[in-house]
Image (cartoon, rainbow, N blue to C red; front, side, top):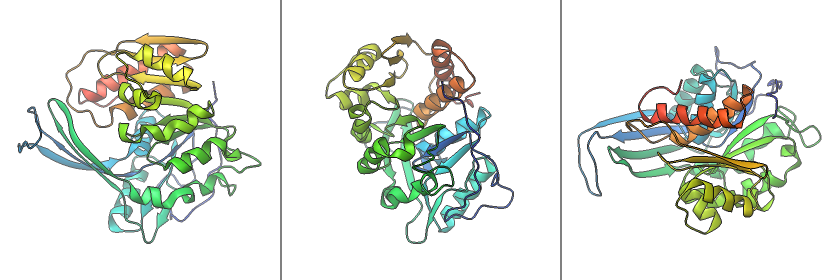
Length: 319
């Protein structure tokens, strides 16, 4: 198991650290990907296409990388964010919110001409109804967000970063493909999530090069394997056959499976009343990373992650 490193974080990229933020802190883990505003509408009744219902609309810091980082921070780790955030008012407010949550913002790429990204979702009592992820600025920034891993701030090709890295599939396919072959990531413990089923196939380079730990749900596993699965153990085995080095497959309230070429572990999550779903997969991934960082074995780490995700969807904080 990779030991959590304490890497100097003296570099400042295009972002200016906020006073009072963790500017001089050393990261335990890097979270690379989407950091944006989540705009979520929730209704306590079941909803269908075309439903017009009363409910609550919230705006909170979100994005896959952000959700993972926030949960890691709750578990006592110090995540650093690598993402693209605009130099607009929404971006300034978002960076301030990140720093307030204890996240390291020194290495964010702040763009003058790209707006801050947003995600919008509608949820009913029957789950996610629809969602739109506007992560175009992250995609446009491309490899610029990775500069700290190349210019010596967090690592370089000659002295690559050797700690855990949480990646999300909001990055472009070409950038994810580059990461799997880039010497700057050669020693990193890569943990990868597809962000959504619509972006699952972006993770194909990790299958082709048999690297990283992939966190996917049953639908995403099916898309990557070009097949349909009815349970997580079958999906996990198929992903290993396709080249995955290690995989965790979730299936909502059904079983979840963690598998590599040394074996397979399947467990069922605790039963809870579902109050929210957006961010559940990110919470599962972050809780699993944190459990392994604490030194928990495979079975205990999976159980800890399932418990945290179940607590989250019930509407309570995942601690």
